[in-house]
Image 1 (cartoon, rainbow, N blue to C red):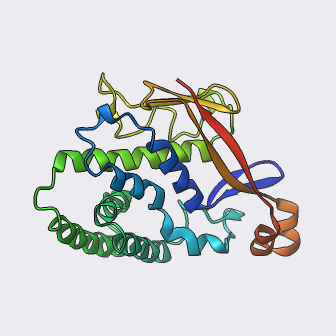
Image 2 (image 1 turned 45 degrees about the horizontal axis):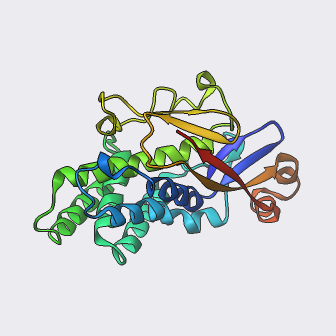
Image 3 (image 1 turned 90 degrees about the vertical axis):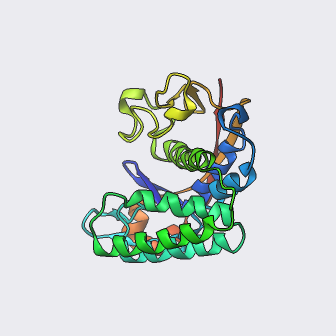
Length: 253
């Protein structure tokens, strides 16, 4: 789950719904910012599907007793998270080889600085997968692969930007991950700087420079779960009782 806390509620967003937003934004990405249009549909599929590993985990949220909030994607217990990451990439590989290579690179980037033994086992397994998958593409363009990998990271972070920030928030009060722009997007900026997003108002977002070829809108699905109901019936039942809602966000030049 992606969680944003308010005074009386938790705004809860399923990871697979967040990933859908990733795909909805990247399908408008300017083709001129990429080396070629080869494998773009595969990279788009990776954006849409990259968090399918969370579908089962998000079906029943669990409570973090220490923090007094539901567990989020960032603090979810490590071992089940690693196991489901592998399951998700396995599922993507059965449908799209190139997309699974991108998703494997994406998940490995989360643990690139880790010395945890379980993370190292995961990284070793995914390194073997990546070598095997690359054999399917004897003429693989590594530069284009790197662009698609960075595009997947950007799509993930842009969707998180929509999910974790209060709509219309001032730049200085944004979630700290995004105040200085999106990491690893310099290759998409003419001056080799990170792409920078900001809320224009509660319904509109823009980026500098604007990396899309048109204005468009996306729909963000979420549940607002009252803290009082959680105290009464527990997090699982409170989430189940909550109504699925959605808000429309516009991207403007």
